[in-house]
Length: 303
Image (cartoon, rainbow, N blue to C red; front, side, top):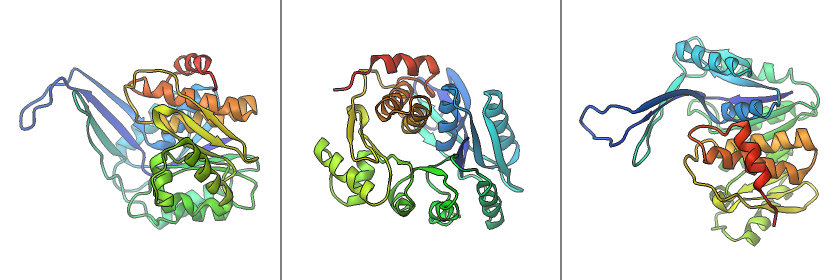
Protein backbone atom coordinates (compact mmCIF):
# COMPACT_ATOMS: atom_id res chain seq x y z
CA UNK A 1 0.00 0.00 0.00
CA UNK A 2 1.08 3.56 -0.67
CA UNK A 3 0.43 6.20 1.99
CA UNK A 4 0.71 9.96 1.55
CA UNK A 5 1.01 12.45 4.41
CA UNK A 6 -0.15 16.06 4.15
CA UNK A 7 0.37 18.05 7.32
CA UNK A 8 -1.62 21.09 6.24
CA UNK A 9 -4.12 20.17 3.51
CA UNK A 10 -6.56 22.69 2.11
CA UNK A 11 -9.66 23.30 0.11
CA UNK A 12 -8.54 25.30 -2.89
CA UNK A 13 -11.27 27.77 -3.84
CA UNK A 14 -10.43 28.96 -7.34
CA UNK A 15 -12.32 31.80 -9.01
CA UNK A 16 -11.80 32.96 -12.58
CA UNK A 17 -11.97 36.74 -12.90
CA UNK A 18 -11.51 38.66 -16.15
CA UNK A 19 -10.12 41.83 -14.63
CA UNK A 20 -9.46 42.00 -10.90
CA UNK A 21 -10.09 45.53 -9.56
CA UNK A 22 -8.75 46.14 -6.07
CA UNK A 23 -11.17 48.01 -3.80
CA UNK A 24 -14.23 47.18 -5.94
CA UNK A 25 -16.78 44.39 -6.14
CA UNK A 26 -15.56 41.75 -8.61
CA UNK A 27 -17.68 38.94 -10.06
CA UNK A 28 -16.21 35.61 -11.04
CA UNK A 29 -16.89 33.81 -14.30
CA UNK A 30 -16.45 30.36 -12.74
CA UNK A 31 -15.53 28.70 -9.45
CA UNK A 32 -14.02 25.40 -8.32
CA UNK A 33 -13.58 24.02 -4.81
CA UNK A 34 -11.10 21.15 -4.81
CA UNK A 35 -8.86 19.32 -2.32
CA UNK A 36 -5.31 20.69 -2.19
CA UNK A 37 -1.94 20.04 -0.61
CA UNK A 38 1.11 18.24 -1.98
CA UNK A 39 0.36 14.81 -0.52
CA UNK A 40 -3.29 15.17 -1.53
CA UNK A 41 -2.17 15.86 -5.10
CA UNK A 42 0.03 12.75 -5.08
CA UNK A 43 -2.90 10.64 -3.84
CA UNK A 44 -5.20 12.08 -6.50
CA UNK A 45 -2.84 11.32 -9.41
CA UNK A 46 -2.08 7.84 -8.07
CA UNK A 47 -5.81 7.18 -7.88
CA UNK A 48 -6.32 8.40 -11.45
CA UNK A 49 -3.63 5.95 -12.55
CA UNK A 50 -5.43 3.15 -10.68
CA UNK A 51 -2.81 2.82 -7.95
CA UNK A 52 -4.50 2.23 -4.61
CA UNK A 53 -3.34 4.53 -1.84
CA UNK A 54 -4.36 6.10 1.46
CA UNK A 55 -4.24 9.84 2.20
CA UNK A 56 -3.15 10.68 5.75
CA UNK A 57 -2.56 13.87 7.69
CA UNK A 58 -4.69 16.27 9.70
CA UNK A 59 -8.14 17.76 9.10
CA UNK A 60 -10.41 19.95 11.22
CA UNK A 61 -13.92 21.37 11.19
CA UNK A 62 -16.48 21.47 8.40
CA UNK A 63 -13.84 22.24 5.79
CA UNK A 64 -11.94 19.13 6.84
CA UNK A 65 -15.12 17.09 6.47
CA UNK A 66 -15.64 18.49 2.98
CA UNK A 67 -12.05 17.73 1.95
CA UNK A 68 -12.34 14.17 3.27
CA UNK A 69 -15.68 13.67 1.53
CA UNK A 70 -14.37 14.89 -1.82
CA UNK A 71 -11.42 12.51 -1.67
CA UNK A 72 -13.61 9.57 -0.74
CA UNK A 73 -15.99 10.36 -3.62
CA UNK A 74 -13.00 9.97 -5.93
CA UNK A 75 -12.33 6.54 -4.43
CA UNK A 76 -9.28 7.59 -2.42
CA UNK A 77 -8.88 5.92 0.96
CA UNK A 78 -8.47 8.40 3.83
CA UNK A 79 -7.08 7.98 7.32
CA UNK A 80 -6.88 11.52 8.64
CA UNK A 81 -6.53 12.59 12.25
CA UNK A 82 -9.38 14.92 13.15
CA UNK A 83 -8.20 17.88 15.19
CA UNK A 84 -10.36 19.14 18.05
CA UNK A 85 -10.05 22.84 17.23
CA UNK A 86 -9.86 25.06 14.17
CA UNK A 87 -10.68 24.48 10.53
CA UNK A 88 -8.84 22.95 7.62
CA UNK A 89 -7.63 25.98 5.69
CA UNK A 90 -9.15 27.44 2.55
CA UNK A 91 -6.77 28.75 -0.09
CA UNK A 92 -8.35 31.36 -2.35
CA UNK A 93 -6.94 31.57 -5.86
CA UNK A 94 -8.00 34.37 -8.20
CA UNK A 95 -7.24 33.60 -11.83
CA UNK A 96 -7.20 36.35 -14.44
CA UNK A 97 -4.51 38.25 -16.32
CA UNK A 98 -2.33 37.46 -13.32
CA UNK A 99 -2.88 34.78 -10.69
CA UNK A 100 -3.34 35.97 -7.12
CA UNK A 101 -3.52 33.60 -4.15
CA UNK A 102 -4.38 33.98 -0.50
CA UNK A 103 -3.42 30.92 1.54
CA UNK A 104 -4.89 30.21 4.95
CA UNK A 105 -2.77 29.27 7.96
CA UNK A 106 -4.67 26.16 8.97
CA UNK A 107 -5.34 24.77 12.46
CA UNK A 108 -2.81 24.26 15.23
CA UNK A 109 -1.42 20.74 15.51
CA UNK A 110 -0.44 19.65 19.01
CA UNK A 111 2.23 17.17 20.07
CA UNK A 112 -0.56 14.72 20.97
CA UNK A 113 -1.80 14.99 17.39
CA UNK A 114 1.72 14.32 16.07
CA UNK A 115 2.00 11.28 18.35
CA UNK A 116 -1.26 9.92 16.92
CA UNK A 117 0.11 10.24 13.40
CA UNK A 118 3.36 8.50 14.30
CA UNK A 119 1.43 5.63 15.89
CA UNK A 120 -0.51 5.21 12.67
CA UNK A 121 2.68 5.25 10.63
CA UNK A 122 4.26 2.63 12.86
CA UNK A 123 1.49 0.27 11.74
CA UNK A 124 2.68 0.39 8.15
CA UNK A 125 3.83 -2.97 6.83
CA UNK A 126 6.95 -4.18 5.08
CA UNK A 127 7.16 -3.05 1.44
CA UNK A 128 4.65 -0.24 1.96
CA UNK A 129 5.57 3.15 0.46
CA UNK A 130 5.25 6.36 2.45
CA UNK A 131 5.23 9.74 0.69
CA UNK A 132 6.22 12.77 2.78
CA UNK A 133 5.77 15.93 0.77
CA UNK A 134 5.49 19.63 1.29
CA UNK A 135 6.43 22.19 3.89
CA UNK A 136 5.67 21.94 7.58
CA UNK A 137 3.30 24.26 9.50
CA UNK A 138 5.19 26.76 11.64
CA UNK A 139 4.08 25.20 14.94
CA UNK A 140 5.60 21.79 14.09
CA UNK A 141 9.25 20.92 14.59
CA UNK A 142 11.28 21.20 11.41
CA UNK A 143 12.81 17.81 12.21
CA UNK A 144 9.51 15.96 11.91
CA UNK A 145 10.34 14.22 8.60
CA UNK A 146 13.66 13.13 10.07
CA UNK A 147 11.90 11.83 13.19
CA UNK A 148 9.40 9.85 11.13
CA UNK A 149 12.18 8.30 9.02
CA UNK A 150 14.09 7.35 12.16
CA UNK A 151 11.04 5.65 13.70
CA UNK A 152 10.42 3.64 10.54
CA UNK A 153 13.99 2.85 9.49
CA UNK A 154 13.91 -0.82 10.57
CA UNK A 155 10.49 -1.65 9.09
CA UNK A 156 11.67 -2.08 5.46
CA UNK A 157 9.35 0.68 4.25
CA UNK A 158 10.24 2.75 1.18
CA UNK A 159 9.97 6.48 1.84
CA UNK A 160 9.62 9.19 -0.79
CA UNK A 161 10.45 12.74 0.29
CA UNK A 162 9.54 15.83 -1.70
CA UNK A 163 10.69 18.77 0.40
CA UNK A 164 13.22 21.58 0.41
CA UNK A 165 16.37 22.64 2.26
CA UNK A 166 17.23 20.99 5.57
CA UNK A 167 13.86 19.26 5.64
CA UNK A 168 15.12 17.20 2.70
CA UNK A 169 18.85 17.00 3.42
CA UNK A 170 18.34 15.72 6.97
CA UNK A 171 16.46 12.60 5.80
CA UNK A 172 19.09 11.46 3.30
CA UNK A 173 20.88 9.37 5.93
CA UNK A 174 17.75 7.17 6.08
CA UNK A 175 18.12 6.30 2.38
CA UNK A 176 14.75 7.40 0.96
CA UNK A 177 13.57 5.58 -2.14
CA UNK A 178 13.16 8.85 -4.02
CA UNK A 179 13.71 12.58 -3.62
CA UNK A 180 12.68 15.21 -6.17
CA UNK A 181 14.35 18.61 -5.91
CA UNK A 182 13.97 21.08 -8.76
CA UNK A 183 16.93 23.03 -10.10
CA UNK A 184 16.34 25.98 -7.76
CA UNK A 185 16.17 23.69 -4.74
CA UNK A 186 19.29 21.84 -5.89
CA UNK A 187 21.08 25.19 -6.16
CA UNK A 188 19.92 26.14 -2.67
CA UNK A 189 21.18 22.89 -1.15
CA UNK A 190 24.67 23.29 -2.61
CA UNK A 191 24.76 27.09 -2.41
CA UNK A 192 25.64 27.61 -6.08
CA UNK A 193 23.78 28.22 -9.31
CA UNK A 194 23.12 24.92 -11.04
CA UNK A 195 21.67 25.11 -14.53
CA UNK A 196 23.57 22.97 -17.04
CA UNK A 197 22.65 19.34 -17.62
CA UNK A 198 26.17 18.33 -16.59
CA UNK A 199 25.95 20.16 -13.27
CA UNK A 200 22.46 18.82 -12.61
CA UNK A 201 23.69 15.25 -13.07
CA UNK A 202 26.81 15.94 -10.99
CA UNK A 203 24.98 17.40 -8.00
CA UNK A 204 22.14 14.93 -8.31
CA UNK A 205 24.76 12.21 -7.89
CA UNK A 206 26.03 14.00 -4.79
CA UNK A 207 22.55 13.70 -3.26
CA UNK A 208 22.61 10.00 -4.08
CA UNK A 209 26.02 9.73 -2.43
CA UNK A 210 24.53 11.44 0.64
CA UNK A 211 21.99 8.62 0.94
CA UNK A 212 19.09 8.93 -1.51
CA UNK A 213 18.47 5.79 -3.56
CA UNK A 214 17.00 7.62 -6.55
CA UNK A 215 17.03 11.33 -7.36
CA UNK A 216 14.82 13.14 -9.85
CA UNK A 217 15.79 16.72 -10.59
CA UNK A 218 12.87 18.49 -12.24
CA UNK A 219 13.96 21.10 -14.76
CA UNK A 220 10.71 22.85 -15.67
CA UNK A 221 10.04 22.92 -19.40
CA UNK A 222 13.46 21.32 -19.99
CA UNK A 223 12.28 18.00 -18.58
CA UNK A 224 13.85 16.03 -15.76
CA UNK A 225 16.98 14.05 -14.95
CA UNK A 226 16.89 10.82 -12.97
CA UNK A 227 19.93 9.45 -11.16
CA UNK A 228 19.17 5.84 -10.27
CA UNK A 229 20.37 3.78 -7.35
CA UNK A 230 22.81 2.11 -9.75
CA UNK A 231 24.26 5.49 -10.74
CA UNK A 232 22.68 5.61 -14.20
CA UNK A 233 21.72 9.07 -15.43
CA UNK A 234 18.50 9.17 -17.45
CA UNK A 235 17.21 12.38 -19.02
CA UNK A 236 13.68 12.87 -20.30
CA UNK A 237 12.42 15.94 -22.15
CA UNK A 238 8.95 17.35 -21.72
CA UNK A 239 6.49 17.41 -24.61
CA UNK A 240 5.66 20.68 -26.30
CA UNK A 241 2.62 21.89 -24.34
CA UNK A 242 0.89 25.15 -23.52
CA UNK A 243 1.44 25.69 -19.81
CA UNK A 244 -1.78 26.67 -18.07
CA UNK A 245 -1.04 25.81 -14.45
CA UNK A 246 2.13 24.76 -12.64
CA UNK A 247 0.53 24.09 -9.24
CA UNK A 248 0.70 20.37 -8.51
CA UNK A 249 2.97 19.56 -11.47
CA UNK A 250 5.84 18.41 -9.23
CA UNK A 251 3.47 16.35 -7.08
CA UNK A 252 2.07 14.79 -10.25
CA UNK A 253 5.59 13.89 -11.36
CA UNK A 254 6.23 12.11 -8.04
CA UNK A 255 2.94 10.22 -8.30
CA UNK A 256 3.55 9.27 -11.92
CA UNK A 257 7.03 7.96 -11.11
CA UNK A 258 5.72 5.84 -8.23
CA UNK A 259 2.89 4.53 -10.41
CA UNK A 260 5.40 3.73 -13.15
CA UNK A 261 7.56 1.72 -10.77
CA UNK A 262 4.48 -0.17 -9.59
CA UNK A 263 3.18 -0.87 -13.09
CA UNK A 264 6.36 -1.35 -15.13
CA UNK A 265 9.18 -2.06 -12.66
CA UNK A 266 11.38 -0.05 -15.02
CA UNK A 267 13.16 3.21 -14.15
CA UNK A 268 13.03 4.66 -17.65
CA UNK A 269 9.29 4.05 -18.03
CA UNK A 270 8.70 5.29 -14.49
CA UNK A 271 10.45 8.57 -15.31
CA UNK A 272 8.47 8.82 -18.54
CA UNK A 273 5.18 8.38 -16.67
CA UNK A 274 6.34 10.92 -14.09
CA UNK A 275 7.11 13.48 -16.81
CA UNK A 276 3.77 12.69 -18.46
CA UNK A 277 1.80 13.26 -15.26
CA UNK A 278 3.62 16.51 -14.50
CA UNK A 279 3.16 17.78 -18.05
CA UNK A 280 -0.53 16.82 -18.14
CA UNK A 281 -1.12 18.80 -14.96
CA UNK A 282 0.79 21.79 -16.35
CA UNK A 283 -1.52 21.77 -19.37
CA UNK A 284 -4.68 21.54 -17.23
CA UNK A 285 -6.61 23.86 -14.94
CA UNK A 286 -6.35 21.27 -12.14
CA UNK A 287 -4.52 17.95 -12.01
CA UNK A 288 -4.03 15.90 -15.16
CA UNK A 289 -6.61 13.22 -15.95
CA UNK A 290 -5.72 9.62 -16.78
CA UNK A 291 -6.53 10.26 -20.44
CA UNK A 292 -4.32 13.35 -20.58
CA UNK A 293 -1.45 11.58 -18.80
CA UNK A 294 -1.50 8.52 -21.07
CA UNK A 295 -1.80 10.66 -24.20
CA UNK A 296 1.28 12.58 -23.11
CA UNK A 297 3.08 9.33 -22.23
CA UNK A 298 2.68 8.10 -25.81
CA UNK A 299 4.11 11.33 -27.22
CA UNK A 300 7.36 11.44 -25.21
CA UNK A 301 10.48 10.25 -26.97
CA UNK A 302 13.74 9.89 -25.05
CA UNK A 303 16.78 11.57 -26.56
